[in-house]
Length: 364
Image 1 (tube, rainbow, N blue to C red):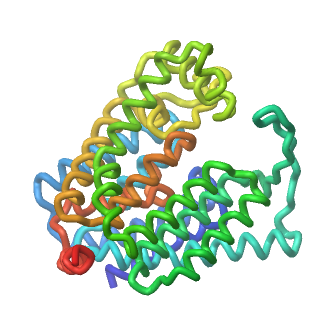
Image 2 (cartoon, one colour; image 1 turned 90 degrees about the horizontal axis):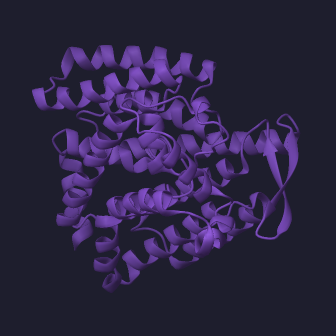
């Protein structure tokens, strides 16, 4: 069926991400390209798209194609094609498929590491006045290991919030910290802890809901302006200690925004000499380009406002945490990492009944 093909597309993408496979891996792209062609062929024969929907999708897919040709990056194209498949899909069911496949991919990676099939390499890096030893696995970053656990935690809280008790929240916190002692991924560990605390507070401390919702509603636009502003204003001095804490990210961002014009359709990262872009907002603006930045930002901000009005606490929580995470990671336009982008289907298409029912239930 159409749903099975779309779910298969989501499952394979999520499985590979769980294993830490890069979005530009040729084998990975070949597999998902075949499944996408089968899924979209079936979908187009049965689903009808409105002019407004086609306008959004055509713009995103066109930008994704240009970005792939110019920058050799498939991220925006993959996100656009996935959104195209989500018409008339139950987003919660899609996210459940993502959770199962992500866990399977993660366990496969762990098994490969334990058995020695996937080799470990140790790297020594300087962090806040001391050297630390971190591990990579066949060029898979330790940050990716922690990031995948954070996504699993977020999906568990989002999908099963009514069934989780305090011991299960504590268990997730212990696993999150234990992995941190292995990866030394500070941002991932902090975001994981924030997800656990927020999930618990929303479920068991209702008084906190309005504050979390308020922060989430404005999180994307505030953190976006903050990233652009601090990139422009940074000149060492009083901000140098903050730059050290972020492993030089501020100085890289300043060099980028002060030395390069904002491209219309994005630029290849190889053009940014000796600059490492580890901020999602800056990466989307310069690597994705101004057009992609404006369209994706508009959709996220609009959906945040709608979710706020409808009191969809858990979806807003994910948008808030992914926005915070984007301050130090460049995955913002990648729908299989920034899972809040799945909610854009609610903005582009008519909201399915399943979501409306869930919102009413959550608001009680």
